[in-house]
Length: 82
Image (cartoon, rainbow, N blue to C red; front, side, top):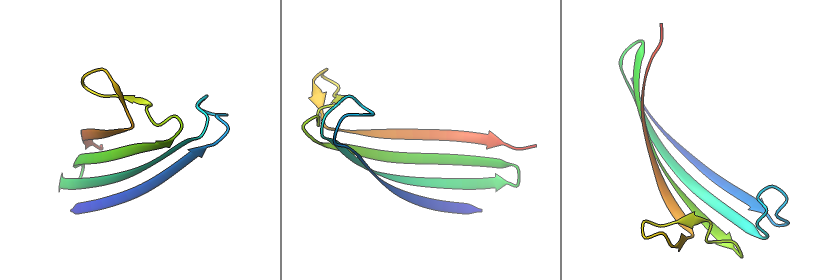
C-alpha cells in the first residue's frame, strides 16, 4: 500500500527554560510518504521545514557558516519486519 502523512508543529519557549534561548518560537511542517512493495517491507521518505522566530531566531547555521532562522531536513529509510 501507499500512504501520505502531514504534520504541523509549534514550539514556544518564552522564558528559555528548555532551550536557554529567551523568546524562542519555532514552527515546522513535515510531509511524509510510505510505500509497501511487499507485506513486510517499507520505503519511507520525509521532508521537514523548521522556521524560528523571536529574539533567538538565528539558531541554525547555513552552508556558508552564518546564522540562519530556518532549515530543511530530508530523511529516507527502509524497513523490514519479520
